Each structure stands twice: as structure tokens, then as C-alpha cells.
Length: 351
Ligand code: AOF
Ligand code: ZN
Image (cartoon, rainbow, N blue to C red; front, side, top):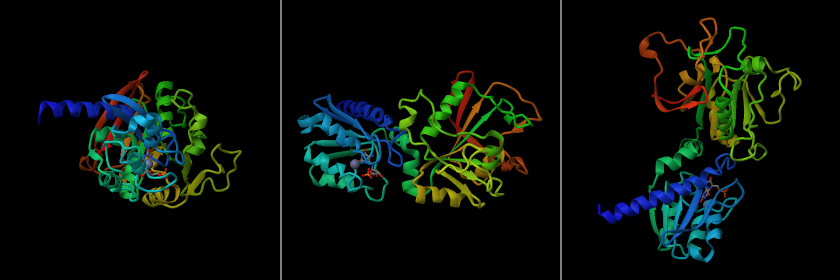
């Protein structure tokens, strides 16, 4: 590879990184659409940028092209997802790029949406635009885990969050658990919720904690009233909440609450994708629900907030899961670790 192409690669990565920064601005508000960013560059200068803010509103490319105006002609567009080729809630972005006469389009990754899936690239190439795919693909895809997994497999991306002590305990035997982790860790959970289309919890959590499970933080980049609250799914196989009232628990009878009385969790997950367009699902529940999701291999990412305290052997443990031998243990790769205030956040991927 020549020195010149090294320099071009570095430049492409730099502008794609800026496009990813744009995309992040929509992270909490675009659901069920993906977060997408676009930067338009003319003679090494940024002449336009934009991001997709919300489903129903124009896509990233349209905002960036508008920002660039006539300077888009002959420019290079950096986009974090393949420009769309379909007429959905908005007209195709690939055609908007053609009409603006951009010379080149650099794309982080293809759009697996069956309505697009390579057709965006084809439209651009047919119009004589040079297309490059595959710059910072992994970083761009990290923003849209749920959308991408759902488009590829029709199943959501499932994050299981557990807040524990150093000895893996989540509550005292009485159920008392407020609070084990710090406000910094609980603030971080707000980000997980803000990214999720649905939160799954169990009847036990509703009965013992009476939680709100909503997004209320004022420390996110977007004010909470602009972030759609995730749908709440209550697993209630034993129908313990069937006759309870709104006045009993905050989430009962909430218009957006879904009750799941069946056993089969993969049917529920498929239904969340197909009927409710919930692509990122967060499980915030007790040990028994956590154990079911983990042992049925339905977890894509385990997030553990661990407080540096010991609660002792009588306290409740984090997962109900009883392997018969060491060979049946569940193992993970540590994808990331981070200190949040006094606590530790571990992001783990099941092996
Ligand atoms: C793009 N740029 O910024 C986004 C894209 O219903 P619509 O019209 O909003 O289309 C949604 C689909 O468009 C979505 O499922 C995904 O395939 C693509 N998203 N495409 O060119 C964008 N957000
Ligand atoms: Zn589009």
C-alpha cells in the first residue's frame, strides 16, 4: 500500500469518526430507526454535517446536504450507514446524494434492512459515484446493536443489567436493596434505559421494589421528555399481578405495559421485534429472571455494576442458576471495564 493511500485511509477514518460523533446525537431518540450521522467534505474541509434525530424526520444525509448547500457538488460524503434506497417515511437518501452531485460516498457499513441491503450502494454506483464501504465499521455498528441484530435475525439485542456487591449479592434476605451501587452507577443505567425499546422485568421485582423503570435523568445529552420511555414487559407466569391495580404498583395498568404469562422467553423476544419494533431490550429483574435468560442463552451482553461492599452469605445472590459441575459454568469475555464513582462497571459477552 502506498504512502498516499495510508494518508487517505487516515483521512477517511478521521471524517468517519466525526460522522459517528454526529450519529451519537440521535442515540436516544431515533428508535426504532438506527442512529446515523453524515459529514460532507470538500477539499479537506467540512462543508456540511447532520444526523438522524427521530423516526419520521429526515435522515442524516438530508440534513448534511442541506447544511452543505451548493458545496455538496463534487464533495465526499461520509455516512455511518449505507444510504437508503427505499421510500419509507422519507424519500431515498441515495437519490438525494445523486441529485446533490457528490463525487464520492464513504460508508461505514451496509444497511441490513431488507428494503435497502446493498441497493443504496448500487443506486450510487449506477449514477457514477465512487463508493467505499468498510471504514470504522465496528465503531459505527456499536451504536446500533439492536437495529442491526433485529434486521439480520429478527431477534432483539438483549442486555442484562445486574447491580451487585463484591460478593455477588443484590439485596438483603428481606429484599432491602436501596442502595447498593452509587448514584454514578445508577445514572449510567439511565443511559441503558434511554437506548432500549423495552425493559423486561419480573413480577417479583414489581412486588418488592415497585420500580418506575423510566428515563428521568437530566444528565443525558437530551432532556428526558424528548426520550421515548421504553415499553415495560412484566413476566408474570404465576399471574401474581393479574388483579393488582394502578394504585398498588407504579407500572401496573400502565398503557404501555405488556404482561407475559407464558414461559417461553424466545417467543416473547421475537414478538417484541415483530410486533413492537423493540430492537434493544434491557432486562432489569431479579435472580430468577436473570438465571432464565442466561441459562437459555438469550443474553447478548451482561452489564454488572459492582459496588465494593460485602453483604454476606444470607443476602440474595445475583443469578439463580445451578450448574451440576464446573463444566456447566457460564463464562464471559470482558469487553470493557470502567470505574463509575466508587463502583465498577463490567461489560461482558457470553462465550
Ligand atoms: C439512511 N440514513 O439517517 C437513516 C437510515 O422510515 P424511514 O423512511 O425513516 O426509514 C427508516 C429506515 O431507513 C431504517 O429502517 C434504516 O434502514 C434506514 N435508516 N438510512 O439512509 C439515515 N436513519
Ligand atoms: Zn435515508
